[in-house]
Image 1: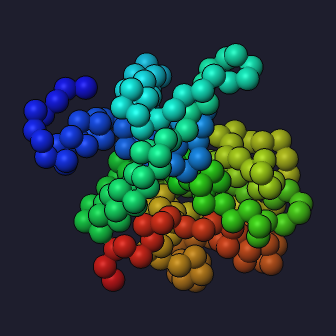
Image 2: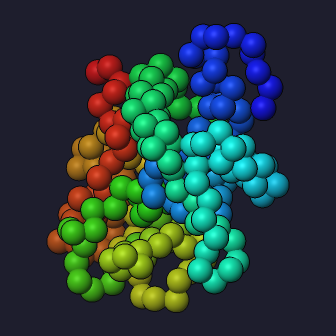
Length: 225
């Protein structure tokens, strides 16, 4: 990492944190991602060589600790005390981004919204004991429609890019922008349903429970009304 050659704490911190992909990697780790693959899953598009490089740089900087997996293959990554101390920085960055940076079409990846839901914001204690499969029919996703599935099954909940092989319990038709705005707390699910912006097909009682399984982004409420 190149140095700015300045004593300023902002300059010194930026030498580590202002590298491309680094804030995304740290965000994923602070949300609990510990393996190379789980960190990469929350950073769609990152080259694996870049992820390897950034993790090594963060380890050298004392922000990340890498411990060999018991299997002997790969490492388990975790933030050090210095890394954990960045949680407030990440929260402030997210709040600033939600307050001042508008959602553009290139930001509307529904797969990332659903990944965040399942891996970071899942209200696991509210899930029913039985497995629930929800198909999302998303329009406006970077110019094309997409089908995605969430299998809600306790700690085994996951997002699927192809049909998971289980019977579908609910179908949700939604625009990618509406999905992102709901997750960010800009709109409420029930209001979007009443306005026809979200259409849910399936048992009404189960459909009413679905939005309660998302804790919503910590940046919710940051945007001025």
